[in-house]
Length: 154
Image (tube, rainbow, N blue to C red; front, side, top):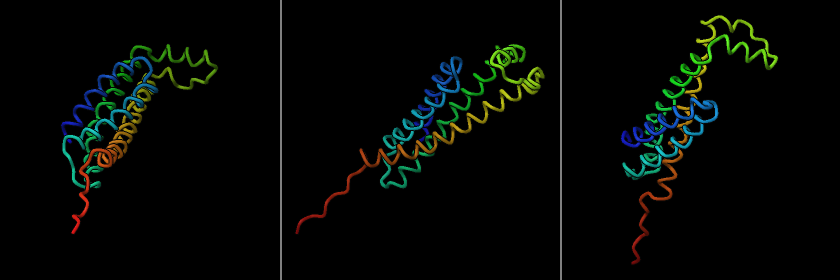
């Protein structure tokens, strides 16, 4: 379980950082979804649970461990993008689209919103990866898990 979570978490962290600097709202959730499925399936493969409930449990735990990767990717790329763009450029961009900017020129509000938004998205992806890890653990059990032996003929 731990091995599967760390493998999937490392992969999602690297892919999330690469995609997070391009377009974090689309790239990182997709990477998280695939990473959660991979973590759950790998956990079933590595641990080989004997019951479907155990497969779902280790898949969910592995997905939760792997979910730290996208959380960190969102935080790192969100802070970096906020620093690169800055409050002034964000205000100009919002005005170009005809949006009311409110108090965006306040750096505390700007950076607080950027970091808070990244945290919320990262926690959402952690929950998504946990759920998909459990689903993938169940799928592993149905596809490749131990098969019930038919009763012997008398």
